[in-house]
Length: 248
Image 1 (spheres, rainbow, N blue to C red):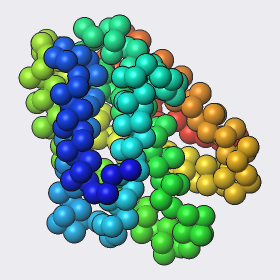
Image 2 (image 1 turned 135 degrees about the vertical axis):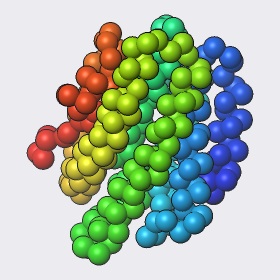
Image 3 (image 1 turned 45 degrees about the vertical axis):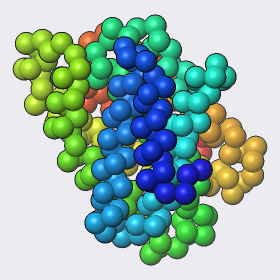
């Protein structure tokens, strides 16, 4: 794992060059690179309650994506959610950039993020009300950072694809849907991290079973995202995140 976000950003920028022009995997990667820069800037200005913890979390979170990215380029197995995202990028590069970004976001947020949270929050910290509240606050504050990027990301997507009259008409609705989806998914991620935390206390087998359940749920959500239509608006109706049952 990288020692700083600066080193992580350098690695991610180099990885961008590993993907040839026209490779649809570039859409999510470039979006993630920009959001990681924004999180680093927010840490630098003291915007989080515990900037050191947030940086540690961000590095662990990013590593899960980079592990999948490296495995994909090496032709090695990846988790089911990432398999769908990468396969669609390879076989359907003509899809709108937003679709590829949403596939990557779904795999990374719904599947990777709960794992990253419990990697940097110990059971004892989950049980301590003050520490838990601090971690929950900073987890939620990431949305504030990402929401500030919604307009800029929309411009980036439009610049890299053909914009239809319908796209222009739906632009404000898509941005509103993005804001709602971020808040909704982050709340579900925190709930899923709680379920994973309880599972790890019961032992490795129980944790593996719950994680497999999460993987299947995320896979089903990505399959939904591959269907034709206005994806953001459909997700605004049906939800972006997935929810593990309290006793899966």
